[in-house]
Length: 568
Image (cartoon, rainbow, N blue to C red; front, side):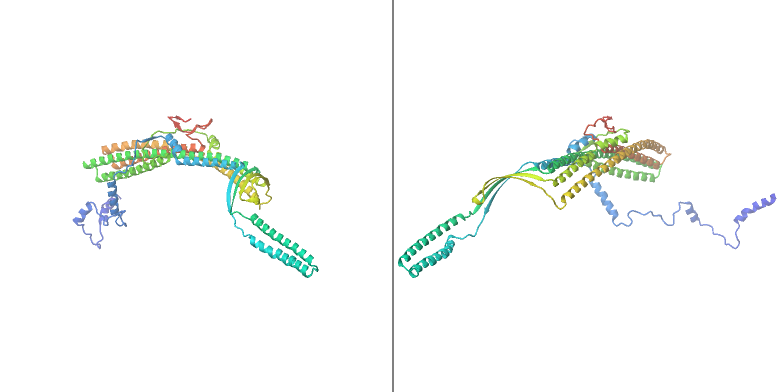
């Protein structure tokens, strides 16, 4: 048995290397092929990743022109004038509330609302007016000759033709006796003369009486006083007063929003400066890494790939620094706009923390917000104004009483336009106006209901604002703690990576990765601190607290600090 196994083991190599006699023997490899196989092999088809320039015409020329233009422009700088303006968060808030145009617009709206109170009051005061007018009138009237001709055709014709002719005819023809005819003719002659004289005198008097002057002047002074208007005037005055008070609270809404914008702009500007410092530190670190890689390449301790990688990462860090500087410039420009200073004013931000951790109670914050939030107070005044508006429109159903005193003088008016004083007292009652008054009342009630529902909605939104601000504060504090721990670990990791690289046991990639981790950790920490500050500012905005006013008794304590102490 042992011999059989030994024989099989002896024949196994022969079986492996035995060939079929029918198969031709393979040719031995050429010496050139063996040498090529031992060297670095070259693939049959060269690998190509592709380039950004593929498919774009003249893109390389365009990129070159961009580089040349930036090189000719140099580093962009802001044109500033004067000494830097030292700013803190409190200073920015104060400047925004006193210099921003929104504050002046809000005050103008308050002044306009107060003026409407006087407009409503003017309706109950006496209304004095005066007027003077001139009138020219031309009339078509009969002249004296036409009146005389008319009378001559009737009286004289009838008198002479009837009386005189009849008298003569009666005397000489039908009278019988001659004496009687002569006496009758004398009487008739005297009557005719009397009629002619009376006609002439009457025509002259008529022309004098009907004479009209060319121009008539009328002077008039009138005094009107409303004695009773159904309560409409008093209701309008009260409504205007409540609306003015509501507008004052609307001004507080504008100022609160402006204060929050000033805080946010300040913290954004401070954050942008911190991110610039982080980017600058990252660039310095990558420059040092590139220098170390170059030195190690010069002595043959590393390949050129490590140098190229360090230069590539350094270029990326420089681009990040340019972006951070641009963000800083935009943030400072927005801050100058809010505090209303010229854009060429240099600013210097104080690097201090304005907040500390606090644990306020949600229910207390919501209760305080419902009592002090200016939006709620403005709506409550609006409700009072809407109630008075209902009383005003209901006054249309009541009678109105008024008095009038008038003095009038008409020059050349004659007896047809008497002069002097006129005293009037009247009452007016509208019985039916097509249902307009009923619908006016319905509209006023609908406006009141709308404002009441707005108040309910705002109260719910305020509770949401307070809750959201508290959640953001807790979230940002957790991020600050986490990112601070990450930053410490990244600092230690970078120290070890640099030490390993200098001793030759680490790679350049390890150092670059450690530096990138530290940069990301510092950036995240700065962002978390900014979020914490803005979350606290949002909480104060949500509950109606302001840095420009002293807190009332019993106000909840927030995280704002002054000189390191909690703000009072």
